[in-house]
Amino acid sequence: MRRRTLLMHLTPYYAPADNHAGGGNQAPSFCPNCGHPVSPNDTFCQNCGYNLMAGNQGPAQSATPSRRQQQQQQQPATPQPPRRPRQPWTKKQKLQWGGIGLAVLIVLLLGVWGGHHYSRTATLDRAVKSIKTGKKMTPNFSSRSSALKLTNAKLLPLNHYYRKHSKALSTLKDQLLTRGSSHDGTLTYRQTGRHFLFDEFTIEVQQVRK
Image 1 (cartoon, rainbow, N blue to C red):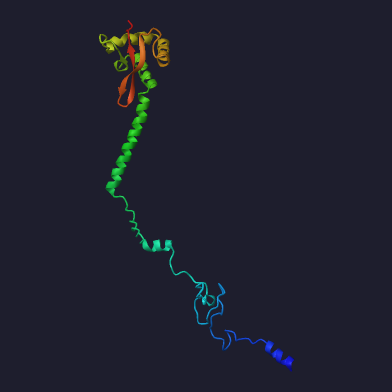
Image 2 (image 1 turned 180 degrees about the vertical axis):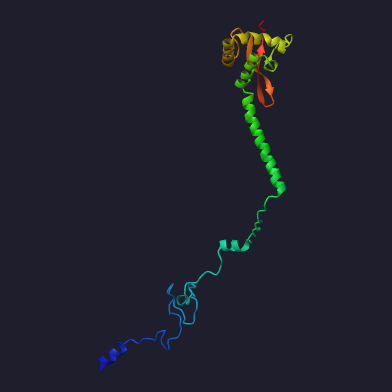
């Protein structure tokens, strides 16, 4: 009899669970954070301040927006101006740009032509041709001496001499082009000025042949 009474005292009695009838929604008897005893009616631990109801709720999301979100909310969106449709050129604009393009083309062509026409070799070719024909010799010759005024009549002796000696004229051309002067030093081929944007070359006469 005594043994049966002892077993009855040792038999554990379990309280109904929260999810069963009669369990109720009660807070734990001890704080799960610090282990301090708490009352079933307490919402926060009086020792550490732990939220005793936090275990029954999902992970709390911060209702405070981040700093980046606050900046984005504070900065108003800059409105983009609407794109204007591309307007077709008017007849006046076409004529203006066409005139500009034509002027640029003419300047380029003149530059190419002038660079060739007034080059050192091309100018010497015209000078040698004038010596051979005896025509328009003056523009291709010059003199440093103020006493020697060159005319077509004074340059005709060159025409007479080299017309009879065509090989000598070819040799003179090579000497002026390579050495810049004739073998006797009476004729010198050099730059004497500028013609517009181009160098101007002439045959400088020291002495006229007779």
